[in-house]
Length: 259
Image (cartoon, rainbow, N blue to C red; front, side, top):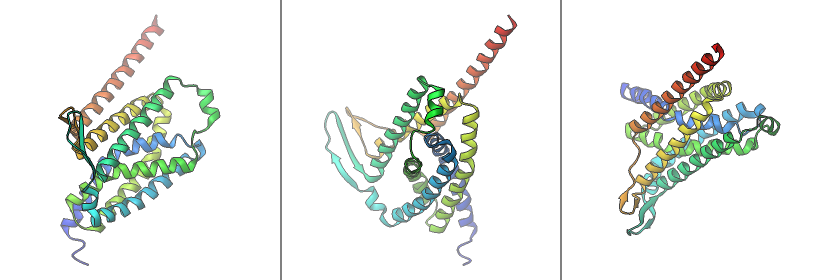
């Protein structure tokens, strides 16, 4: 029992909880946007149930990865070298690629919806998907996002209880924060545009990572993953643009009122 609660294990637990929190930011944004597709009265319940089930399935996935890591990493099929396209696809790369495509599709669909936004139509529709559909979306995308955090956890420690505890704590933090993020976006509707473009970039990052994992070559050029530094730099630039633009619009409005 004493071997379980060593300083090394407790340090790993703290680091893993921080890792879960950092890697969960884009997931949290997706959950907040996806939950809007459910009827408004059910959105909080959808987020809680979806994340709770995702916690359970993340622990199951962690157990499977520990037992069958080689099966997840071995190639499932290979597209032979040629002048146009080649790659070696395993389960991990396929999941990440599919997740990237789906997130980009979701972001673009919502952006398109905003361009032809009708408040009366949205109010009357009360959500475009059923509670079950949205919960399943949240669970599936949670699993897509979880691969990186689980593999990162496995690199830090080999103790199952440490990794499982970090997943549970990270999931509870997401449940607590998801309502607050959703409420913020609801009060500040213009930030939804920023959130959707961030989500779109997350999709691009997943595609580049999946392409790298699959060793994809397009016209002889390898797909390289977008680094976290590049990702956060782009997000920072987008946020600064949004802040400056909002401030500029307020200044123009005040200037017009004075005249």
